Image 1 (cartoon, rainbow, N blue to C red):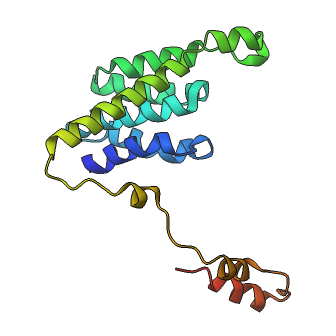
Image 2 (tube, one colour):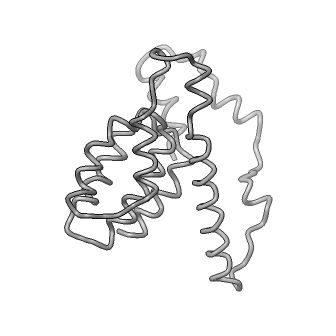
Amino acid sequence: RRLAIRAVRRLLPRMQVAGYASAVLHPLIKVLEGPVDELRRDALDAICAAAVLLGPDFALFVPVVRKAVARHRVPHEWFERLAAAAMAATPPCMSDADDWEATSSWAQELDALAQIRSVEAAALAAASPSAPQPDPAAAAGKLPVNAHALKRAWESSARVTKEDWAEWLRHFSV
């Protein structure tokens, strides 16, 4: 479970979570309130990664997370800093937009999150020096593409009935 939570924390910065914030944060809050003490710190780290992405919108979740943190007495400086920033943010409609952007500390938090990721990557590379380095071309995900076959697969002008569309969609199943 710890590895899964850490994987979520590493994946969050690469995702668009604005529409799924509740679906991401509520399970992490349940882990935070759960009986396993060892998972609480990792869950709070993942919540902080999501908070950085949500920015001032994280203010909606601060009371729930704060209640769980207080109940289990989990000290977490990063969460406290993010919660204070989210709760102190004045919405743009209540102040000048220039002032709101200039006083926002979310860019600094994004930098901190990037620094944490780079430190983890360096630690992982140092832990396994004998691991083979991935091929840069393979890492980029470049695969040979047959442009004619791709164009033919995407062609949808001859689809009229429900069955035609079902057959067309079936060709995309993996």
